[in-house]
Image (tube, rainbow, N blue to C red; front, side):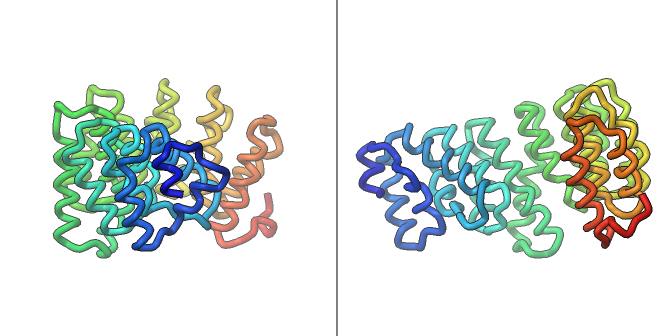
Amino acid sequence: MIERLVSGQPLGPGAVALLSDMDRQAVTAFREAWPGIPLDTRREIITEAALLEGQTIELDFERAFCVALDDSDAETRRNAAAGLLNSTNGEVGRKLMQLLDADRDAGVRRAAADGLRPFVLEREFGNVEEANGDAMMRVLRHRVADAGEDPEVRGRALATLGTCSEPWVRPLIEEFYYHDDRVLRLAAVEAMGQSAQEEWLDFLFEQLESEDPDFRYEAAVACGEIGSEEAIEPLSMLFEDEEEGVAVAAVEAVGNIGGPAALKCLGALAARAPEGLSDAIAIAMEVAGIVGGSSGEEEDL
């Protein structure tokens, strides 16, 4: 297959699946051949791999994505980094940190900042080597503080830091909540949700009433991440939001909060909901029952 790729022949059906879970020998051969594969084919491989991995848990292209992180093409590096969003492999973490620190392309740095989020969480659990964890924090903090950096990169780095309990993170989030740049304010709202701390609820309730639908959406998602029953009533005010995406986010957030109060709220909505929300409500009620420790059938709705 590698010979076929290098020759520029079209990818046949199922060809990319052969790159799943490669052993050491296959990775070595793939890495050596990679630069000689035509650019369009390299891009297609990574795009197809990401698509396939999203469709099934049986395929794992982590090693292929790692090879592509060293590509000379920024788009390929970007897509490879995006394909590693759920990885907690130490080698992946180090590569993403290097890309965030030094890659020339802002899109690659954005994807790398997002990809580091699981590693920040792992660091909180003490599952990351201390030196690597500290280096990662320094790179993320530097990107957030760099006023000359692309706002999207700064925002992704800030949102990633949301799961970190270091004492300097909370003031940083609050500072950017009041920033002049809209992208950074949105990132601060997202970071509040990533923190899972109820101390941010008043800020989020304020944004649930924002005139900007993007802020209402991010605040709804953040409330779901925090999981406080206190947010159910404010979220219910968005069930009939003019923006369907915001309404769906509010429904999903109540489902993520879970428990009897969430099930009662969703049950009342189900009786009067527009058709476009029916599927979201059904899924949210199922999730709410799981989170609350029951199937929901025992609740008096």
